[in-house]
Amino acid sequence: MTRRLLLFLGATPDAPVVWAATEGERVVKVGEAACVADLRPVALRVGETTAVVAFLRGEAAVWRVLDAPPKAASKLRAAARLLLEDELAEPAGVMHVAVTADTRAADRARAVVLAVRDDAMRRWRDALAEAAITPAIITADAAVFAGEDRVTVVRRNGRTVFGAPDAAGACENELFDAIAAGLLTEVGDQPATFFGDGDEPPAVLAGAALDERDARDADALVGAYAAALERRSPPNLLQGAYQPRSALLKRLPEWRRPAAIAAGVAALVLAGAAVDAWRLGRTADRWRALATQLHDKRFPDAVGVDPATHARAILRASDAGATFIGLTAKVAGAIADDDAVRVDRVGFDRPRGRVSVTVRSGGHEPIEAFRAALADDGLAMRDNGGFRRSGDELIGDLLADGL
Image 1 (cartoon, rainbow, N blue to C red):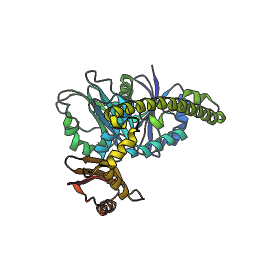
Image 2: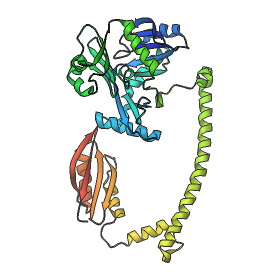
Image 3: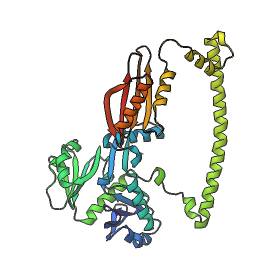
Image 4: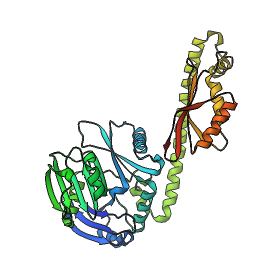
């Protein structure tokens, strides 16, 4: 039976916090602290054998499902960031993203993405640390009920928290009533649990096999969270830069930790550098031998000539009009020293005599200056479909024909 300390955090670290001690699904005690800093006595009282689970308000988090996710961890995290950047129109760099495999859907591969703003995550981590609290899990209150085979809606103090098989979130009651039909499309006559504070259940739950409970009953409401935690672990935001320190570091005396970290990092860097140098050297030798073999076979009149040198000579001698190297040289020469314009891609369709350049910048003026510099160098380009805004940047394509 797992002993837990559940922390239901407020909108900021200075807001009141509801805490609850549980053993499995049983609620042992429920209390309230004026702010996160006042939780220190509670944390010291429960001891180190208790797992601390901190719930951020669902309004501060984004929960999404990623179907058919890539198997490689790096590609999975990149796909999750692109999904959020596309939906939220925010640069992925401002978000802290946690990705967790979803084991509920046995018939299809999918992953759950939970994200919060990185600066908010940092504030909560620091505030909890100052209160001597080391959480095992930081998640969103709505994420606990997400991904289950039933719908759970909690309505209390003017806000609604909801979790469903493919949706989760939190917002004001009025906003939930306006958008619930589009969010919870799978309710129908499926089982649903509604915690209310005296109001009627939302219209979206009409027709569902409804289990109504009182959200004002703290033991019942906290018991629902405890039971959900017993069934399955929610997505944990303590990933990447926020992953907890290892148990070894916790056992080291304070004054020895920096030395242990420095020694460990130095050993890893040296070992990694040696292995990488050996592996890259062997790989480079193999590719160099293969390139020379293919070159000598294709160009019997230039056997023994370095392939790269031979390729440059052929391109320089080309009289078939524009060349990719020549065009990229023009593009590179048009970029200002202040890097106000960045080039993501240069595409050259030689049979059609067409070149396209994908650029991004903080405003229209640098892009126009970039176009003018290209025109001065003999490459007149035009907008191809306009520019779109992604976060603080404009992204779009420039096109030139008839080359």
